[in-house]
Image (cartoon, rainbow, N blue to C red; front, side):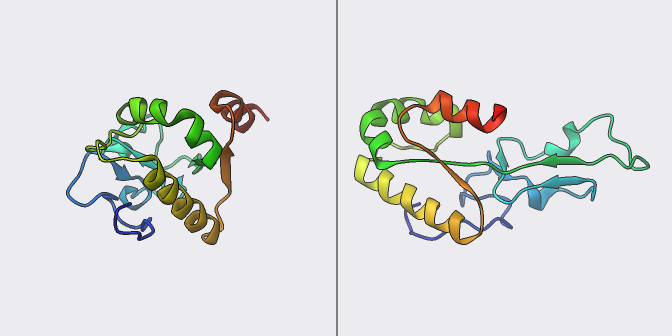
Length: 138
């Protein structure tokens, strides 16, 4: 987030000039598919992959947005891993200029923006895996 602006959940392409990742919600046409703001995927044809989901059915597909963010302590301890796997997770453009201080600043902007929007923010403090396990298994 180089310009310091919060993301807009109604933009299909959250990164200007980069169409590989899209916010899912603004692409959905089926009212029975419910998607949380800011849910993203590296596929602009998400809805076409929803199979066995018929218009006459009363079924609903609900995809919840989960906001994971890192504490400064986690960034300090895992910065090299974050950079190493960034393209695997988020298909980043070019993060060769990514520095620890700018990552922390961007991370805080996201945390504050999502919190202002009423979204729950789950912080990863010391270890990623237990945080994920808690989200999905309680």
